[in-house]
Amino acid sequence: MQKLINKFRPKPTVSVLRLDGVIGSGGRLRGGALNDAVLAPMIERAFRKGKPKAVALIINSPGGSPAQSSLIGERIRRLAHETDTEVYAFCEDVAASGGYWLATAADHIYVDASSVIGSIGVISASFGFHELMERQGVERRVHTAGKDKSMLDPFRPERPADVKRLKVLQAVIHQNFIDQVKSRRGDKLNGDDLFSGDIWVGQQSVDVGLADGVAHLVPKMKELFGEDVKFNVQSQRRSWLQRLGIGTASDVINGIEDRALWSRYGL
Image: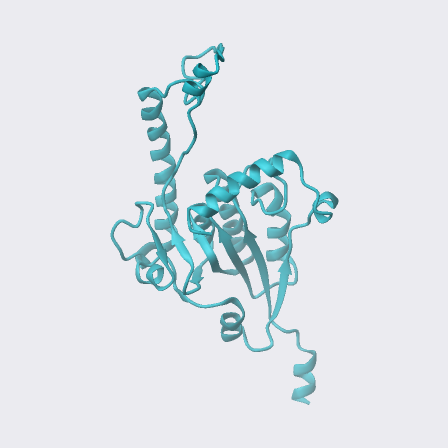
């Protein structure tokens, strides 16, 4: 009789939410970009569909937009609180910069032995073209209302005042990142220069408190919820153009930018 009851008893379910790609602005709706607008329906389903025992985040991201990282993370935390659901993060190749910010939305963070973790900092990179323009006889004409409206214009010589202003802005964002990590990891943090922008690999990230252990999704969830646990994988819906493999010119440009981010971590 008990066997019959067990046969029809609902199996524990874990919702799986894959966060794979560069974190971009709301306008980047192509496949592979992570932003709050695109992910919102998927995150909602992960927490509310089927009353899951837990939500597992599979993270593979070199970072990107600080604001979008914060918005996605806050949405995950709000739904975790509203549904009283534990969140587990499993980091793959890299969870760095904004990718690590997403990981801190989880209650528990696990890594692979070769995962790249950390890069808690802020970076701004661009090019300067003013000398090239001068050699080609190109005149740059810019008219603004507001002396700082054209700050960091790549088509004119870099101004010390612009760099100073940029560093002030970066310091604010960096402190927000630090506050997020401290609020989520608390007393688990155990290391010097955790917020210098440095990175750690696998067990190193566990040793300094940025992660809780080296583990993978399926065996860890079976350990916690039993061998019969089911996985409800939430997937991002793609447009018909994306399903056909058709991209736009902006996709090509964004792809180049994304490759630059990934390449910082040797990927």
